[in-house]
Amino acid sequence: MKKMILLVSMLAGVMTFSGCVDDKESASVTAVREAKAAQLSALAALSNAQAANQQALADTENALREAKVAYETAKAAYQQALADKANSEAQAAAAIQMAAAQNEIQRLANELEEMAIRHKIAMLDLQTQYEAALKKADDDSQALLGGLYMAYQTAATNLLNAQQEIAQQKIDLAKLQAGLVDSDEAKQIMINKENRKIASAEQTIAEWKAKLEVFEAQKAPEEAKAELVTEKAALSQLAQDKAKALEAADKAREEMNDAWSDIYDQKYHGLAMDVTGGKYGNFVDEEGNPTGEAFGDFIYLQDYEENALGKPVEATVNTYWFRTTDDKGNTTYTAVMNRMIQKTVTKTETTAPGVESTNTYEAYPTYYYQLNAEGVKAYVAAIKANVTKNEGKALEAANKALAAQQKVVADLEKAEIKDEAAIEEAKSMLPGLQTDVNTAKAALDKANAQVAAIQTAFDTMAAEAANWTVTIEAYNAASEAYCDAQFVYEKAEDAYGLQDAKVYALDAVVRGNVIVDGINMTFDQAIEHAEREIANAINTISDAKQGIANIEIAEADQLKALAIERLEAEIAIAEAEIPALEKIVADTKAALDAATAAQAE
Image 1 (cartoon, rainbow, N blue to C red):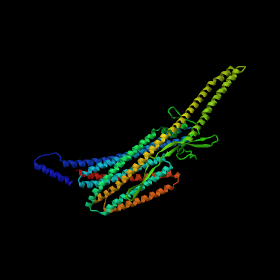
Image 2: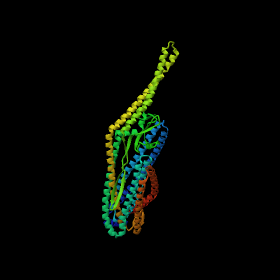
Image 3: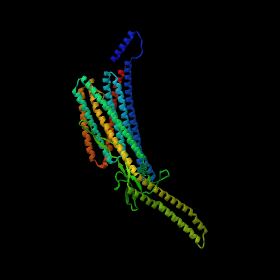
Image 4: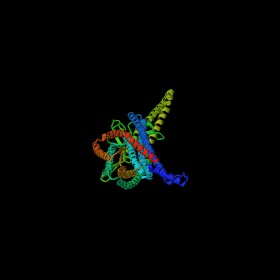
């Protein structure tokens, strides 16, 4: 502020001495004014981006809540329909609604992943703009605003990470509750979460140790200032590396999404959805919608996890099967399609000297279906047998009834003494019986046509199986490439975080004080705080390792329930911490705003 007043006084003296009145702003004053305006604009953009992301997360959470309600409603309707076997139309409709709700939950998971990457890219750009604007300020302003900005940036990043983690946890919980995850996947999800805790804690230890080393060295401010220039240059390069890695991850995600779209474009995919949606267990109308008429009360095509019938001996966790029950009550289960799971990719990366972290990324764990040829053959044979038993016998019975009545008429007409009244009465029954025959024949023709359509569908799937496999393999490759790109970004982010910690500490030495969570500290207090953070991180690693050990020994049938229980508890704890994080952001932002406004005066 003093420098600005002195500059104005000098300019006033020059103008008085010259005897001229010049109301034009000098180039230096213009530069100062524009630099301050650029700082304010960049800071406002940062704040607006944070607010927009928080609103997007809230919108996703609301949509997820609606999808969960839709799934639970459809699931209840489906279970009720199963209890009432005659209500096959309601069963099919509820199954379709369940699938739609599951798809919506998965779509929201994909959307959240995309949102997180896009927001990180935008924030990196906005942070670069603010830092560029800050470089145009004088040294004193850079020192003051730089420290306050770093405190705000750290607080805002912590809040954002916490909010995105909660959103991801809620997505994971919804997927578990909606049956999109089996017990093996539930186990892997829990182990992955513990591994991420370990990785995060190891990075935390590395960063606080870097700060601690600077705090304990107690270099003179001028010496620290010279070192800070070098370290900031290194940080700038790492920021560029991180930005490039994030853009590469975004490109890999787009390529993975394109590969996912290719799956939906496959003929095989639509037919597989028809099979798993129960379409081929019922008659359908001209538009392919279930009419409510089933091929038989004892033929069901379904995933046993989605019904209350229990696990058949012959079925596996990821098998779609049908069951047939003979007249003696003997039941047979036959697999028609197997659901193949895309496994998680887990790698170990060295993020800092002496720090080895296991970071796990799941590029949308998904599944696809493979036909069981013998099961398909048995299923079509069972439907044909059922059509013969029902529609075929119905036509046979109608023909017999018509033939019997025709014989009655013939016998009456052959009688020596004809009873015209009896003949007319007997003849009057023939049209109705003929109608019954026609109706039964139409029903048999329709059933046979639909059996043929089912056979054609399965034949088409068999013919498209090679293309389907290639498409799935392409998606899996793109999915793993995305995981690899995420690992590269994670490594770049960790390297940046470690360097940023050193810059943060050197900047504090230059200023003469440390700001932690919006609170000013002496260096002795900062050293104590760093030691506590390191100790807490060590405890986190120990707890996470014990958590993995407990998960490994858990029974398979307990894993889903355990995963749900843990997620619910973690979400509750994380949500309780949000107000404190929000307050830190508000306090650091207020301090930065006040200092920025004062500098602009």
